[in-house]
Image (cartoon, rainbow, N blue to C red; front, side, top):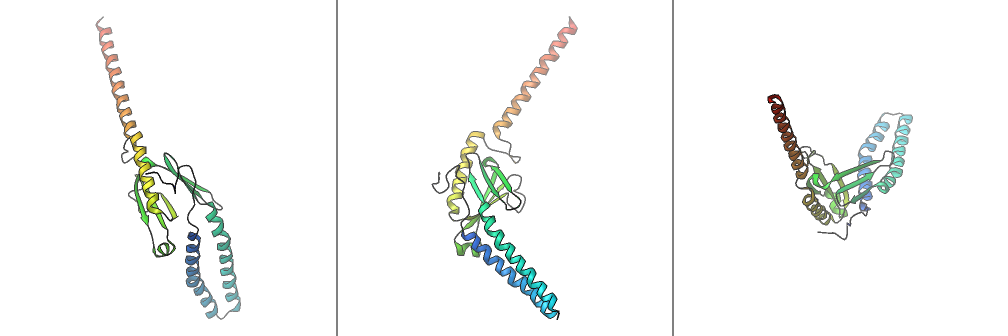
Amino acid sequence: MKSTKFPLFFPFKPDKSLVSMYHILFTVIMLVVGGGFLIGGYLSGSIAILIACAVILTLIAGWYIFWVGKYYQTIFFELKDDEVTWKRGVWFKMTGIVPYDRITNIDIYQGPLMRYFGFSSIKLQTAGYSAQARAEITLEGIVAAEDLRETIRSLIRESRKVSGPSDATATPAVLRHAMHDDTAVLEEVREIRRLLERIEKKS
């Protein structure tokens, strides 16, 4: 099923409400952790310690405000005809590629805040990651998650029609057959060589 929302070779970004969710999570963390710091500084009875705690929390908040917008601008996902690609990172750029014929699981996750903002995360697992808890790629901030999952599933089916099903090591069936044929040819050549050597010895 081809999707008009997720066409091939058109990079797309998470929904902007992903940043709003980050804001809420950061605020909660600051209230819990930062509040504990300030209370500790106050109970210490030292104005210097209290001021130091306030300055540290202010610097953390300033760093977050600078970082979160930049980080969102770097996130891109893209569906290609044979693979899913992603990239992100403000200071350290990260990119990833997952071929469709390696994907084994496509899971949709939606927590309470995600449900409130109306988006989900899609976790893609491959043969190498299927025994682990974490996904190889997580596409976060996806509004039409079911549509994207069905699009990826259709691309997986098309990819496997071309390359054949993959085993646990993601080796396409076509390649396995080719390797088997090469081994058979090599054994036949060796048998011919042994036969010629026996004829030569008799002569």
